[in-house]
Image (cartoon, rainbow, N blue to C red):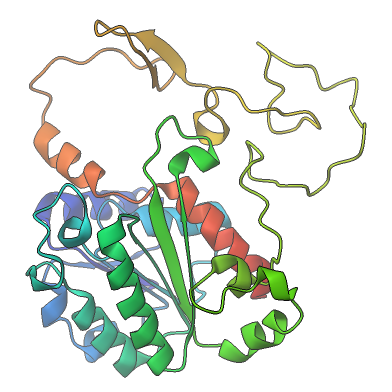
Length: 304
């Protein structure tokens, strides 16, 4: 088996099984126990371990980023409710604060790399500090970056903090020694530092390409703009209202006077759609696949 998926919600767990059957995520087993009941022995033999797997956002993002199914990786997007502005504000006293269970499993198994994401609210900063301290105490390099889904072309903000812990700490210490002194943030964490990309660039391009492949003044005659947007193959692909995966969205004018993007060809649905509550609950906690893939690609560029 390539992957282990841990998800306590029955609806989301079945969704994962459907994704596995459809070949959209790595083949594996789905465990519906609480992460606090998982033991190190349960994780042996798996190249991928996904804790709080949800709707399969991280495993799907791995596929989008080009991560092989047999390459070792863990993901753990712990529940955000304890640290979300929309939550009750219990933070570390909330029973859904489950990072200690993840930390213990990581300490026992010592995975090569772990990825995760968390709310980017002010309350979550202490959580990120805890994760950094815990992983660095295990000898891992740690980095994190907060950016909105709009940064990868989505029609909404949904700012999240993406983080990673890598067991190969030495390579980052080597890279950081070559960075400009002005780019270092000694008092905090920085994914820009971690990846060795000492310039803050990349997300501004609508297709996530940054300055790569840009030719000054270059523009192929065959690349013609359609509806004012030239697309991801153009040397002049300026941002539109939405971009990337969302670039072909249809815009509907709603009764509240606002325009909203929908999937092309999607027909309006009536209230009472089967499993609607389960879908909404799981989707609200889901990882943005393309934002996560952007973070993964940045890591993959320097961790060959």
